Image 1 (cartoon, rainbow, N blue to C red):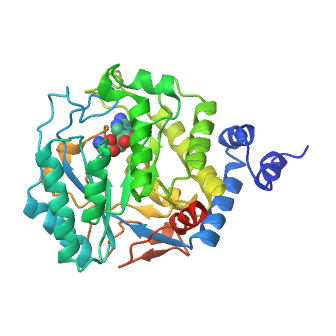
Image 2 (cartoon, helix red, strand yellow; image 1 turned 180 degrees about the vertical axis):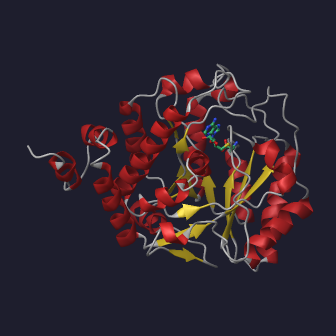
Length: 365
Ligand code: SAH
């Protein structure tokens, strides 16, 4: 067999099975560009050669959860806790609107107090009103009750991102405290509730977790396909020194491996699911300054410029080295280097929904 013919024949298949996905995840560096080019072509064909923007508002780092990998976990006493004021959130939303980002994404530590739920509901409806229903609203506010998901949906949010983190239940157990607040089953039920409520539903995983195998990552892709998600945000796991999983630190070589695995995951997911929205994550940019552009070249089509006020950035360090530097400025709202992504246009002033969502609803009828 000729060198390289391995992945070419896999890429020509109509549907990829688990072994095919594992083979693609493990293909040599010489073959990977073929995978990336195919994924970019699939993106161009099914959703267009555009990148959509979501202005990211990191609302609060107060979190009731204690995930062993995350820098804003409840037991990390080394960060100062904050919650943005109503005015700050509205100002960030108006910045997104005026700069034509098209959508915002409100993310936060997990909180399900009545006050939190009410405040978010009020913010959503106010933002909708202030922008004449023209600004898309994505939420990433963790596990909530069905009723809460419904209330926020009725207020005007229409996309929700809740990462499954890993689709391997026993690995999930190892990454979280063993208590009722951190159950895989509950996370899955929440994701289902989000989808049932009518949101464009997003999930994702961390790549390069301790104990994670290539088989696990292949299963993650299959999980996302079978769940029929509309959007995906996934990226490399990066140790945070103030967490139980990260206290021994990492080295750059390992991070580089996770980065290249993340590019492969994005490319494979694009080929498998074709018309969903896939984020070029900030974690990729943390490892490689051109990380988001590389992700776009591998089939990603969403980036999330950060609109969180500068003074809170330090407080929302989920992982080590999370950049505060992708400031939004008027001359280049995406923060992407256009020279690195020739042929890609930035979708300004539009929501940038996926055609997948409409197709999914059509299939359900
Ligand atoms: N509480 C919200 C969102 C906050 S964190 C929620 O649960 O949806 C957003 C994502 O950051 C998490 O879902 C996780 O996938 C990712 N994350 C957390 N710690 C990380 C780390 N150390 N390295 C890489 N990604 C991490």
